[in-house]
Figure (cartoon, rainbow, N blue to C red):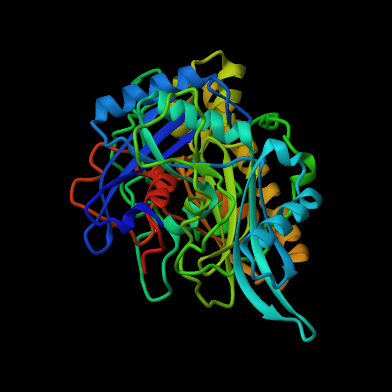
Length: 474
């Protein structure tokens, strides 16, 4: 069960991505409420292809982050990587738990692109049905490379944290951003960005992109396409570099449709077992029970699907029919790859490159943007190339989803989240290139205590918030 089932405790959702860390503290006095949040930049070199590589460096930064913000140490962690594999498999109806576990492990040998001894494997029964001849069952199977989880847990424990759950970031994104059809919320419910914001260039005011800066709610991305035709690369626009795919054969494999229950079904194979007693030695990569891998929301009945696109340190694509996550794909390119590209081309620090990208954005004419001309032009080129690359990947993923997921519902909109919504014109540009309505959003219908977002970049909180809640807020 999720931690929010214990109404007397608070829990911190902790999103650790290349470039930044975000924490969202929730309490549950009848309904989950965001009480406090914090974000901070992370130094480069801690990750490679989205995986933790510098455990000690990350643990040091996490320790300082929690100390400076006086946050509770009980946390839920998220993972997003091409090394995480999700499958729905069909099996004959098996009643015995041991027999089911054996059948799942046997099937896993055929399904997984990794040896079983290198994998952490979990499963749960989704539904039982009759195909007209025999009784059968659909089982959700999740596998991760053991070292992926161990590195993340070790970094957290070395920082003095008490990780209670490891969840897929894609599931957290859907939980945080889903809005029931009967509810209406601002396009950005987390003061993360404003399409209208204008700031001074970084070489004039180095602090203009302060993480604690407040922004007005972002304007709707549904604009006249003709307004976007002027936002083009200036000169030759090199493509934003992306890191090589880790597991090429997983590039475009869908995550099959999952009918999720309102409660977490029992999982027999322990995946990451964390006991309630004292935290083990940091080097001991203890496990958390597999039932704590999933905190899936109640299923909804809708005729269309939504593509949730979280653009942060990575780009995480999750297609959901209602609250059912039916497809997931993680891209290595995101805001941080754009930042790195600009920093390398113009010999800037990563911090200054971030400031330049937010200063330049995708709305104003380049000639109207104050600052060093060459950097302004290159920043615009990087942004245009970055959006185009993400749009291409979205189109390719949508085509594969429609052709590979059984009974795939048509996707009629994109909900955009993450630091990308803090870049003026990014949602509108993405909408122009993808050809679907793009809605920038940070926290969906989640309740927020007064002052909880003061001094915080709300655009970075989506995954952290989704990790801390058990279900979609209805």
